[in-house]
Length: 518
Image (cartoon, rainbow, N blue to C red; front, side, top):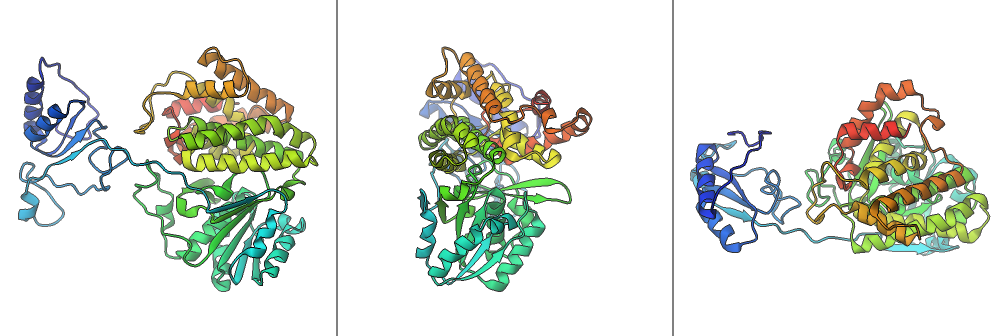
């Protein structure tokens, strides 16, 4: 094929390395001189000879040819699409061709995977009474982002009391709604611009956190392009749109009042386009709060149904982080601990909301799982839950829980396609589900047995918490689901969370998962 993006794939069988080199030279002369040549080999001498003989600008070694040339997740090159082809390729550029464009340069892009990372807020305070840390905050003007329910519960006044002791002037925004909209974020940003805070306090559940992160972003960068913010990426460090640095005007302090989202320690926010009924997950470590305060005294009055839904969200965060292609030793330890806490303490917190120990443990689990998934990312379970929540107005944690057994079975079986991530050497999701089952004391003599027993344990937990186990039990009708099924599946496929799922799903497979959950 003369076209580098042709979907046709062919291969030649040769009898020797030199014969293979000769075939490659002839193929390049057919229409690829100056562009790229790819070799997969462990022999350094063969790689060097290949690089010497091929008349191209880029030699790609042991990496996917579609990505390896441009500085992506498979090497340490700077991302670039402006790749010249020299005189070999009779260079075509956007400007007039000069001598520098005709020089033949070769770059050998060996497979060098970037170092991994572990990023969380610089300070995390926890245990009962930790809210009093606000009295030690440095600053002059504090802006509280919350909803009216937080005000009625007296939590806003409580926070203001601590801030007053630190001599802060305080301004409050109380118009956060569930699934905060772009309009809400812009109204809050306008109020921030008038008040000019140097500290922003996010007080509430995930919606307050998301809204505060969005306001913080636009307060510090009023001219930023929202369309750029929502662009997807393969590596958060090598993205087409670079988030600006935050913290020049203010710091963000996150105080959760539910035990579920983990947003107080994550690099994520979800802003909703209410007009088009679309949720836009934003992801960048600049969105990570500077300080998180995990005070269990703020969750003692959470109703049982919310306790159940948010607790199952914690479980989904931990399980998806554990099997993610980006999981590491650091995130695995956190994810397993969060899973253990949920199974042990969520039923207690649900049945007896006054149990201070269970409330504290679940509040910790939410934060611990948040630290895991902000570094390991999530999977297709969350991709689907985002879309189900938007379309059918199902609470996020509940949508996650309904999908979780189906997605575990899907990821726990043999994949048809794999997600591209260089540190994911082989398909290990079934093994990791086995590790979870073993950790929970479930029978796990085979991967299949472990997956089935883990799924059964989750369904039993949902029944114990009186949580619906199907979409139909949430009021979704077959007619409504059928009318939007493939658009939901398509949108879920495009969700950022899908890129770190261990199994790369087809849109048709996502549709089947949703149907199975009906």
